[in-house]
Image (cartoon, rainbow, N blue to C red; front, side):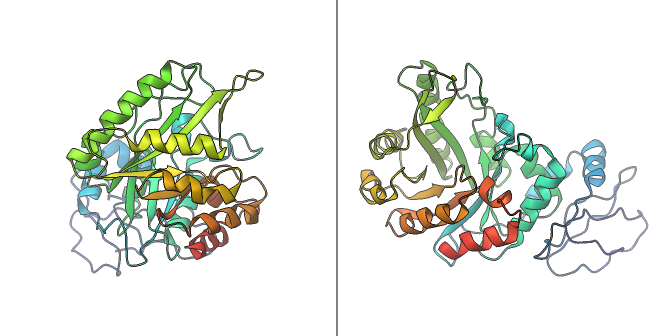
Length: 344
């Protein structure tokens, strides 16, 4: 068998080829008649520069063997939600499905799928990174690349509130359903709950969130609820999240009470405008929580300091961070991820 480069799908093998031994941590799949070899497993990328992804191989597999996604999910090696560290470090990449492609002043930073996958594979290869949060298209690619073994996989559930849309706060469940997460053997779901007291669409989101909490609890699957009190800027019409201590406190209280059981509910919360308020804010509920990254701009060090303090609180179990680690100001993904892991 031809050796594969880290981060590249495995090349096709002939039907008559005898089974070959595989490298530790990698797998191969013999080609089916009339179908190319499957990019089902790849040795995880080595730390360092981004490793190129063979997008053509991914596309060929999607065209000729779409069942490869389910097959890769069935083979995936799973792990507990919380590992030996007792903490959770998740890289988030579910922004594109909501039409949110910008990072800072780069309006289409997340629009290059090969580049995004390369950044994700590098981030997932770093010590201390527990898993990834993304929509089906991205998770399917990562499954085909063999990048999700021994990782926590979170499916993003509601992406219908497209960024900038008039219906943005009527955030419908257009992503993973609870039954999808269960069927694929994923480990958790995540949903976004933005509440604008002046927008009736928020009520639809609130109710559908409660039903999603119920459905996940029935399956004994954790669901991470990301609550905000939000409002539209009267000048621009853009939805703004209120990060004041009072607003974050109220959003936590609302989210914690959704559904018929809170046994499997986690919270995904921002650090407040004044980080010193976090201790009081996190007294609102006993549900386990992770901190979200959000937009940090050029002040990466400032973001780290905010996270560091909040991570000392008893309900805070880890971090779920996306753009600030995948697209840091200096473009050093490995260093950004390693620093975030060090906070845990």
